[in-house]
Length: 403
Image (cartoon, rainbow, N blue to C red; front, side):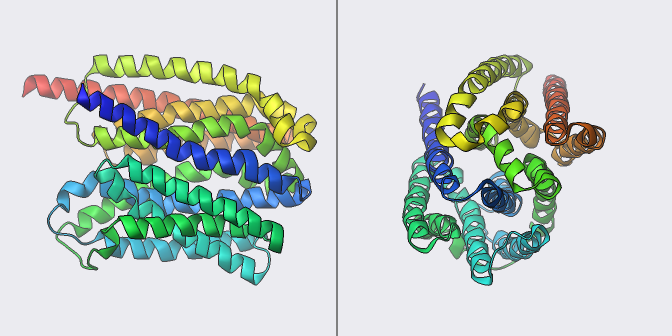
């Protein structure tokens, strides 16, 4: 009973840790920015935020998950991960800098530098906070996100004074980074290689490729819409997806809690998986209905100038986001009990479906074609992950019976 209470408490704290900064950023700060700039400029800011999130997910979240899974290898002798972290941090800065230049959204030199510093802080936070997950200390994860939110608020005041939106993300990431430095010791680990180095490098590489595909696919609609149709169309599309995205983003931290517990489990039964799938499917369907219903009034409240132009995209973007919600809860099972290459394979299948659909649909449907392609890719991804999860657990049960 105590275990389930702890799981519930950690899920609540994890939801809070995700919901508070998302609520403040997406439902207060970003609409505030949109009210002070035109749709084209806001579209550029939306794309820049997407690049920041992609950088953190690829280079921060991948090493976070790898360290969580491999923690038993480093419980006594530390090493490897500090070196890999520094390498990934440098690569993240170079890659995102190149992306800023490619999309021509970096702004002036100072804005670009401050943006890259915010990226570095965010990637570091993503890695250092794994110590909280290892210790199941979701209270500190929550407090870290409170620090992030405080930084966002102070950065918004600076935005009013100096007119630079990047200050919001710089101070937010900076505050959370300072919190992690105070509350963790993982950043003090030695810069040495151990006998586990090669195995660890392979795991990080697999997760890196998976995160790269997953993150790019999450934001590929923005990466296509901006250069093809402009910042204004991206602003309308973004407004249409805001409720669905908010719900799906909350799923990430909950899935992180699930992975933290699954990482400590030796097996899972088919019966447990069936119950899990049914409950998850019910939440996904209900969440889709609620999100579609709430989207128009929410958009009218937050982005009144975007409402009419965003209406055609609401249903498609919401359903796509909720499929992502469903997937994020099944993925930890495949990651824990499946083969290393399964996550990469799943993302590769989704990417292929997305690209083929996009080539066929975008010329005829334009921005709506991007939305349809994303929906088709998500449907196929969910089908694949469900089939894989059942194959893995059925095989595991058979092996346990034979042993």
